Amino acid sequence: MSDFALMGILNVTPDSFSDGGLWLDPESAVARGEELVRQGATIIDVGGESTRPGADPVTPTEELRRVVPVIDELAKRLPDVTISIDTAKAVVAKAAIDVGATYVNDVTAFTSDPEMLGVVAAHPHVRCCLMHMQGAPRTMQHDPQYGDVVADVEDYLRRRLEEVVEHGIPADRIDLDPGIGFGKRNEHNLRLLRHLDRLVAIGPAIVLGTSRKSTLGRITGRTEPAELVAASVATSVLGYERGVRIFRVHDVAEHRDALLVAEAVLHA
Figure (cartoon, rainbow, N blue to C red):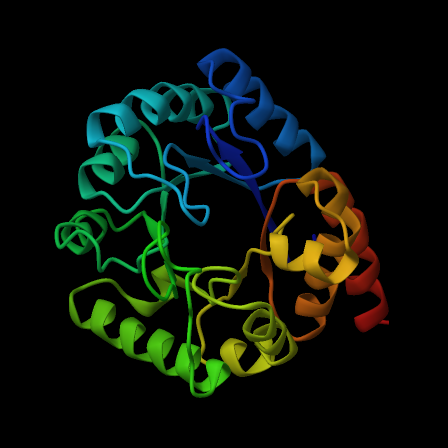
């Protein structure tokens, strides 16, 4: 058995940067989730609100309409797969958990909605991911500034971890995400990728999400997200070498093969 996990991205949104509009119909979204599992995903991350730079917020009612039927059906069809809800709203997280989600992925690290901590703490079978983000999705890329981005992100994740543990969620139920591309310039993203080992040393598993992100396009000169698969895989392999073991990706099959090779080499 491999020592890494692939979190397949399933956005049921009209405006996500890479796959917006592709899986709006619940039936097609569920089929896509099943395909991601066949490719090697052990976690399916369902999102109903885009967090791309400049994205507009959606109402809780609309987000619930988008995600609950998909999570409900995926949980029934894929009982051995972890179904994750990608949301910053406690009401959405609670509804998703009620129909089978066992993971809450919050890009605001439970800071946006004060009720989120209680929802996750009340369900001991549910894991969660706390992400670093400077600002909010709509404005986060306007002018992000850091003294030392690695130290700043490390300090934030350590502090947030301690705060969440103090509110009743054990550390062994928490993963951490440095938030590549969330309120960070290209140079910030690259420094974080180079020093992922420092974040791994915090203790909880690190979730790395670089898949098809524009920072890779600026390096390669490619403008279409679908053209950034190879670049995405490269960052995941580098992350694996530095100790990362959870990868949030669009292209599961390609990442699976590359990470299996990286795993074999590092364990030879």
